Structures are given as C-alpha cells and as structure tokens.
Image (cartoon, rainbow, N blue to C red; front, top):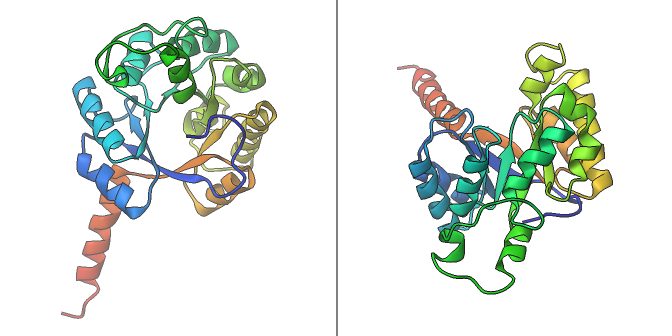
Length: 251
C-alpha cells in the first residue's frame, strides 16, 4: 500500500462494494482489480457483513478500504479492528473537523484510536512496536466534498493523522452550487486543486473516474488509485449485455 509520495505510473484500479457479496470481490480480483472500497455510507452493509468481507479480502490479498458511514470514532475503530487497510472519512466540514476525526484512526500518541485486541493483533497480545507499525500500515483518507474542506485542503492534507485524500465529486458539485455532478470544467478544476494539495504534501490521491475523460485526468494528475465501477453497476451492465445479445438476433 502506497502511503507517501504520488504515483508516477498508472493508477491502481478500484471498485466500490455496495452489498454483502463475497463473490463480487473474488470476481473483481480475478478480473484484475487491486483495491475494493467497502461503502458503509451509501451501501447496504452492516458491521457483521463488514467483518466477514474484510477477512475475505485479506485472505484473497485484495487491498481493502472502508468508507465509514460517518466520521465517528466507533465506526472508524471498528473498520480498522476488522483489519481494513484503510478508512475513508466522508463529509469533512473543515480543518478543525479533520483534526478531530482523523485522530480516531491512529493510536496514541499520534492520535486517539482505542485499543481492542482483534484480528489485526491476531486476537492476542502484541510485541513492542505494533502500534507504531499499525499507524504506518493503515491509511486514513479524508474526503474532500464540502466547500469548507476544499478551502482548507492544504491544512487537512498536512495533518500527521491524514495519509491521503479522495474527492467526493457529487456532494462537492452540489454544495458548490453547480448542481448534479457532470464532470464540468468547474468539477475538473476542483480535481486539480485537491490533486495539487496532495502532491505538495507528498501524499496519495484517490479519484473517482466516471468517464474516460475523468480517467485520463486522473492519470495526468498521478492519482494513486481510481474507482471505475461498483458491484451493482457491473451487475447491471452484465444483465444489459445479455439482453442486448438475445434481442440482437434475427429470430
């Protein structure tokens, strides 16, 4: 997992997981995806499913981030205790908010993450140096999707408890008064603003890429990883392809 510097080649390919579907993770990994973002904010997933999916992803060597439902201490600690490689914190209001919630993802003295003897500790006591190593291993990624977070992006990304950034393009477009996200010139400029802040701080950037122009911009901006699909969209595309095949014949 890259935690410092920016990607100089092609971004890692990621997908969103919206439902409790282990097969989707297996199929995506077999197809060539490197990273899954389990969506607890907008997906239909509970903690029991999250525990099971994270364990499955770890066993299959699929890098696993969790977008928590809210930047809440319990939710952040729970995802990390389950063994996630990182957490994505949504709806960051501004730099002050970022200082408070990012600390939940790091053990003291760096942050204020609570200690629970869980999967990451092999369910037992740990050797000296474990907590420092865990702070380095796990990524705390803050989402830039509000005007305040965008304004404070340089302060946010330079926090010691923040390892990277991700743009929430739909919320950012709506809260910036542009309406629904259409990857407009204004949207692209916001992408560049966040990418520049991440680059200055030497920290990785994740970008959503809903279209080929979006993907090309992510490559230009040297994004570390990009989201290019999700389990429900992939299922819909597969069903549509099958129907189109059946209906295209002459009968």
